[in-house]
Length: 129
Image 1 (cartoon, rainbow, N blue to C red):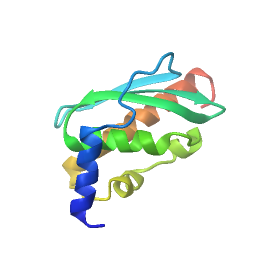
Image 2: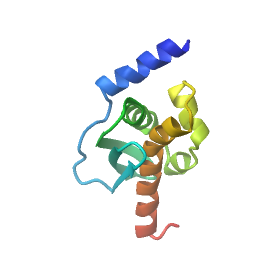
Image 3: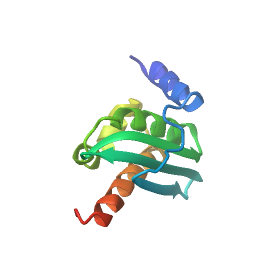
């Protein structure tokens, strides 16, 4: 695929986001923002047997931040907590499949940071870290 098709995929996730929803009785809930451009994001999820079985997000901001949140939540359903915590900046770049400069990369990484912090907070509460 070329960059145009990947950009169309991002726009599709922005217009019709996957997992933009509230979770009833989440195991974790975390929020964050990107002060450089004003993106805001909150994520909450349910973990059973160290597997992410449901997730929801809400937020506002640019196409990159909101579309990446949609793509990441879709990608992480069914993954282990260990695998989610092991995700890196490069994994996000591979997920969105378009090159980003440093400023736009911060927008894309917001969802990963919020998700990982939410899981880490849960693990601290449960005494696992």
